[in-house]
Amino acid sequence: MPVPILYVHGSADLYGSDRLLLDLIASLDRDQFDPVVVVPGRGPLVAALEDMDVEVQVRSLSVLHRSLSPRYWMRFFGSLPGSIRALRQLIERRGIKLVHSNTSHVYDGALAARAAGVAHVWHLREVHTGLSPIGWPLSRLIYACSDLVIVMSDAVKEAFFDNRADPLRKIRKVHDGVDLHQFNPGNDGTAFRADVDLDPHTPLVGVVGRIAHWKGQRLFLRAAALAIEHGASAHFLIVGDAVTPGDYRLKEDLIELVDQREMKDAVTFAGVRSDVPQIMAALNVLVLPSEMPEPWGMVVLEAMATARPVVATRQGGPLESVEDGATGYLVPPDDPRPMAEAIVSLLQAPERAQAMGMRGRTRCEHCFDQRRTHQEIQRLY
Image 1 (tube, rainbow, N blue to C red):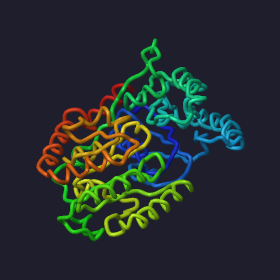
Image 2: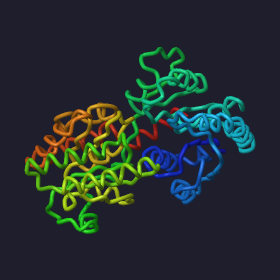
Image 3: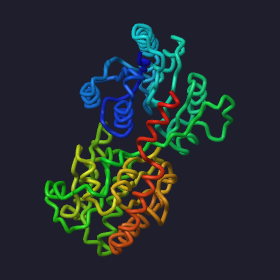
């Protein structure tokens, strides 16, 4: 009989950690493991899981957000006991043997696992930079309530545990890998270029990811303006959209910035797309302009696997994934000038850019194959 595993996740979208969860569950040996997923609302992740014949339950969860509102914290702690009770009942009813919390934003699964006396794996995929007053208590709770803690990068481990001792040897680093078949140098980006009405010979530089203040789209546009001033005859692409009201205001600011810099003809906002492998193939350079540390930065691996050079800010996950000067460039997170210079240098030396891209592909094959990631997690189970 396959072992029932309960996955508790804080979102039903299909962005970074959501897609990683979907890929992990798709890889499970269903003769060994029987997945059940709980998310706090309906969304594209639910439909994608149901298409794979995975049981999904939508129920209230206490999802942690950065907030100073007393009303928010009252709701958070007020809903926690009921959520833990409901999850414990689910664990007992379905005979769950292991709970896998796929985010540090949700604590219900860990506490329900402890209450039910079953094993718990906490998969940390975030860097909490805005929770310093409560960061240490949360880290202690994560460690105490887990049989195993998986961190996706050194940046995540440092954010939660710094250099603190791991006396019970619970912490394991497992890099999320990329699907080398889905993202490969043989992909053809011409259909995407045609869809956004872009000449097939125009160099394309892009950002792929949710629009958010810390993701750096404003920094990217400032760098794009400088690159254009330095003679780059390229087009600049922003793929992704806003989610929160604050992020929608940021998107409006970005559109206004494009207007102010008279870059309307040089910038495309493509919105949310499902053809990311083709987008990566259409790019000449992928930029990760995050102004705060990325926990990992999967889009960097997706570009490298497609043999595209990357320009990323020098912090977080890219410190481990990018070989500076070999597979791309690492630049400061607070200055658009070095980013613009890196972009221009890659556009002006296409043979060097192509060589960097191929080294990135080789690096992914050797170090970041998604199949090895999934095998390692199932071994840890």
